[in-house]
Image 1 (cartoon, rainbow, N blue to C red):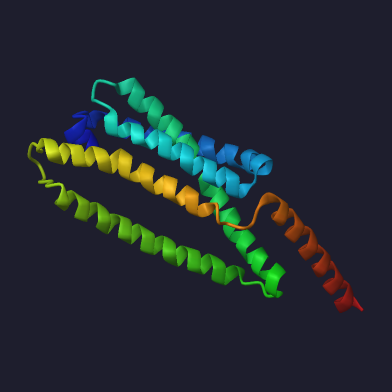
Image 2: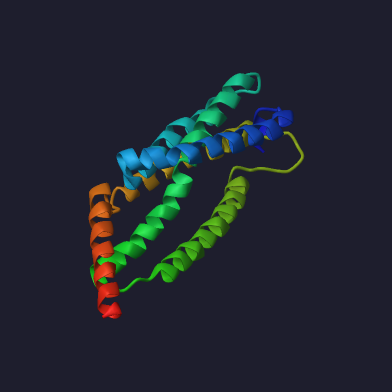
Length: 201
């Protein structure tokens, strides 16, 4: 919708996606080093907030700003790409946290619950997109009204920026900091070694 009706440059859509995939791979590659330096929570939060600042720019672009579209997409996907592997690492840390606090490891349950809510989020996102298109007055395969075009601009930029920012705020409540992660890892390793020695005896 954005490329067809707002930018009127549907020919750029394939290149836009290709740039995004390459940039996301770079972001994924950078994520490990950033997480080791700043911690998973801070890197994840920073990636979301930088993504919010970048994605909002799409609301203000025009079809003749092709290089700016490419650069913004590249920078946005690098920033967001850093969050992708970190999320799964944080889920594993939650399983460790549960074992550290309670003595019971629930890795399978933790990942299953995450995937369950991930699927719910995908479905909700698709339903929300369809609902918002209806609200802004979108009608397929015709020229859109100025209000509808503005609505599409908000959906491609401002709305995702708000969600990224709020997600970053929420993740600050994630209690497993880098120091706590190191403490948990060391203590769990010591516990398992003691358990192994007890079993060997």
